[in-house]
Length: 570
Image (cartoon, rainbow, N blue to C red):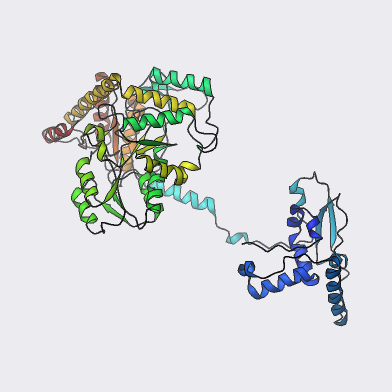
């Protein structure tokens, strides 16, 4: 709300802070005595505070004589009506001015018992706002105040009761030890620390500890320091940012790429910005989409249609209901993070484009792992030219942190210019950029292809042995191996037994990451897990499975499932 300027020649000599500090007293006094403030108060009382900007108030300052004459008329009217000011009470309060300031020469203030409180300019602003005895403060009834901590505690206790409350395992990665790490029982020392084997890391290829990445980080921090220095628009764009974006665009065979601080932010920002900006846009979203995609779609508040996970027929049924001329975004993942499924990418793209849609494809769990250069399922299936917008991460197979999108130069420039999640945040530091550049160079080399082959070999060996052991492996054609438990408490118990008794770490996955009743263990083999480690995992998991009262599946049935899985495995 813009308040029209009151051109008082006397108050104009005060600083803005002095006027703010004493505003209520000045206005209360002026409403009764001053022709300027009196006019303002009468207009507010008849027009309403929300219509203040529409008031036609004079912008020409009154002269001293004009204000004095108007004040004398007000004083005469008071005398006629025998209005007297109380000598014992001071309803006008005080005005705070600096000690260097002369007395205020305003005639209406001179005629009232308002006090001038002088303060040195170097006194702290908090001191200027100290409680004054003559200020009447509202009485607060504490019994009606919302109990925030009680609310928080009740929500946390509810999670503990349904076994979805999460207790983080304290894992310290050690350079050169991957895929093993240290479990830290104590935060500040190594007492009771022990070596564990990690089977749930998203550092799928172990590049987070690759010598080339470590060297790149050391060189970058030595040459450039630790931080980026600002947002991309304000001193935070370096040659490393531009080099990495060019490298990502080349990896995905696109015109351009754009970096984000995480792929969560990339998905959220891109989907929100597109959906909010495209006129009358609709979004068609896979029911299994990641929370980051759901968040961007939900925040955009555009019409959305949810199709069953990887169900091409259902997607087409929904597309047929939307006029072809309306902008549409079809959003889905290639590799699902929790069930390991891989979509029929070509069919999804063809159906979406047939009905005039633009496609947004999350390749987060595929980049680095599939395709000749590690560009994901799109490269593996030779479909990069059909994919409109690709989102990926630097924080999984590339062993770093951050996210990105790749597409046409117009598309990325549009998100760069309008996406608040990109604009209003500090850019990634040089250490992260340098390590990501090194990771992509490895991914596009023979070494990267060798790491992918070895990882797939280990995935096949582990899945086969788990099935032979009778464990309820959820079949998938990808590198992700989920084992169905179906109970949050049992999944947590299995996780704890494996860690406490066998020094094996597999994180239990529960709600809200997966639906209730589908709780599971999620296993991710890497190129650096050995056959001996695989055997130890299978034996330990088989033992704790029986110890918690769960039964193993019929081996013949499992082997039939294995045949189907191997037929689809890349």
